[in-house]
Image 1 (cartoon, chains in turn cyan, purple):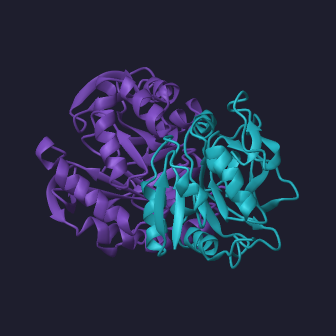
Image 2: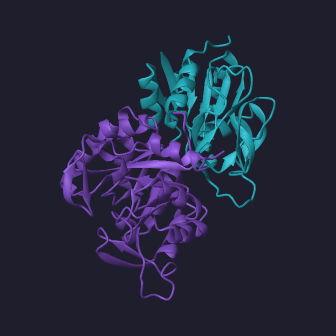
Image 3: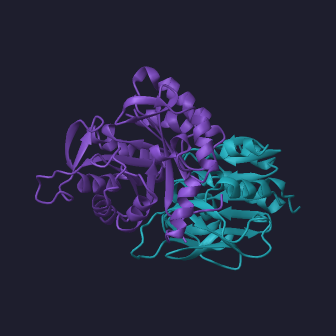
Amino acid sequence: MRVTVIDYKAGNLTSVLKTLRHLGAEPVVTDGDLVLVDSAERIVLPGVGHFAATDRLDATGLTSAIRAAIARGVPFLGICVGMQWLYAGSSEAPEQPGLGHFAESCARFSESNEKVPHVGWNSLEILPNSRLLAGVEPGEYVYFTHSFKAPVTADTAAVTYYIEPFAAAVERGNVMGVQFHPEKSSATGLKILGNFLKLEGTE
Amino acid sequence: MITKRIIACLDVHDGRVVKGVQFVDLIDAGDPATQAARHAREGADEIVLLDITATHEERQTLLDTVRRTARELFVPFCVGGGIRSADDAAQVFEAGADKVSVNSAALADPTLIDAIGRSFGAQAVVVAIDARRDPEAADPVRDAQVFVQGGRKLAGRRVVEWAREAEQRGAGEILLTSMNCDGTRTGFDCELTAAVSESVNIPVIASGGAGTVEHFADVFGRGKADAALAASIFHFGVSSARSLKEELARAGVSVRLSC
């Protein structure tokens, strides 16, 4: 099945594409071709790097196209910065708005004795009724690398603890995000991406 | 809870995993792709592939090896050896690496760290430091020196200061190898690892000297390491990442066991 992968030139897509192919999907990459979003069956927004890089989504018209696709019920998955972009914004780049699908904003981890960035394998506390995390057992480990995070709210699908509890996954209807890297999270990550590829649109 | 990472390291020469003592008497230890997949299956949290020859002519061999190794690997994958420019790094990322490790080239031109970090994010840049204590120095730990060329030549920098600069320039992690301990199997340099780890706010990967489970527990505790590299103890099935992590868990170290 076809997956439209959004490239906003903020890093390396190879791992995500490779993993999608491994799971039997056919990724097509767009860095501005809106037809690939308008006709998308499902969309993945990967993300490494800085929140400010998402300004490219606005400049290319991808933001509006993605907003329309989400409204049509197309399943959408944001990864890392791609998840944070679903929120109103991030203190990493206060002048750059996010999609605002979730009303809250992302912020840096609080000052503490722990290191920031949060790098490594940490466990998930799964909240009920997530389609994305179906079959993932509480306490399974996934790989994180980030300094900013989304707050725990009613839309949070999984919570992870580092310095403070934060949203490791968010899900409302067809719109989902993961703060961790499922493409780097071994069998657990493959299960989660596999769940996403099996979702029906909510049209 | 965040776990301590066990990282399997594959030294690669001419497309094959090799094992030797301080890079001499190399023994063939198998195919990199097969070995990496086996380590991941057996619970390694991450794979590091170090091209120990990395001459210009062998670039293509390395990229082919990286591509083959990355294909079926779904844990973080770091590649080092011979990365001298942001373009070199770009090729390695394109071949499927998630991170690159830079060492001598970053000492020769520290802006290499900034350049790779800008293009690919700090999480993608690991600065490898080969460190040797100076027993004559007033403070052998604080005055530990950085070496280049496989430990043969002084770089003229102190380890802790170079680690700090690397962080400021945008390194995402420090891979600290103790030249004193490397190959000895007598344990990591916990004092030096702790000194570096306490000086930076990014993860420090300890390397050099692993011989027993206690050595790992020690470097995660006293050494304040966030991760530890294991090379020789994993080869030839001597000890798997899983058995190492099971023993560490029994010793009270937080590790990822399900995988």
